[in-house]
Length: 67
Image (cartoon, rainbow, N blue to C red):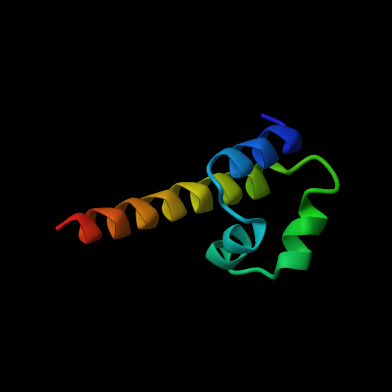
């Protein structure tokens, strides 16, 4: 999966880049810099973990609203 694929995934899941940066604990300009060149393995793993955690949080919030 390349940077373009990750950006497409974020768009499909409607997750803004700033939210991923916040989840990782970095600034939005930093994550934007990461995406200028191919993501390192470490950065890719951090981004994917953040996406998964954000999805879990959103799912939990939606489940709590349904109760």
